[in-house]
Length: 109
Image 1: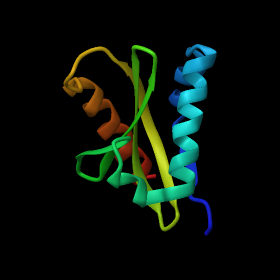
Image 2: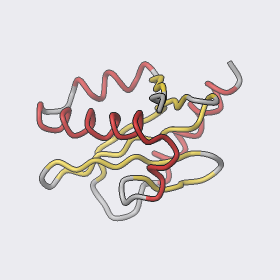
Image 3: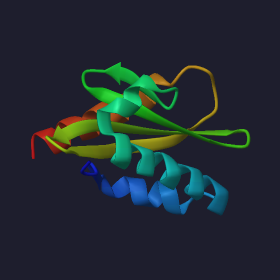
Image 4: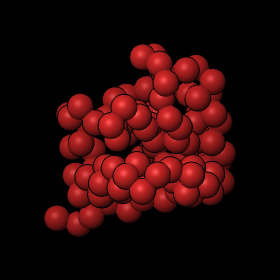
């Protein structure tokens, strides 16, 4: 089985660099699952559909919830467009709007 490719919005590296080593490890672990399982990962607790082709990849490190928004950008490719530390039960609308705006930017070239 061929691994899925993952592209990253430049802001993602800034976010990941700001995380602790343990948090970075959890993010890398979930990204590896996405590479290995592709859309099949959607049937797990680690992924949730947000809206309009935007998906949320979930990682947790102790009491910190990390969220990465992505979309399918090619036949065998995803693009991670936004990430943040979640501090409340519901995903804040402004975080979704940031992700949707970046997704549109990537889709329109």
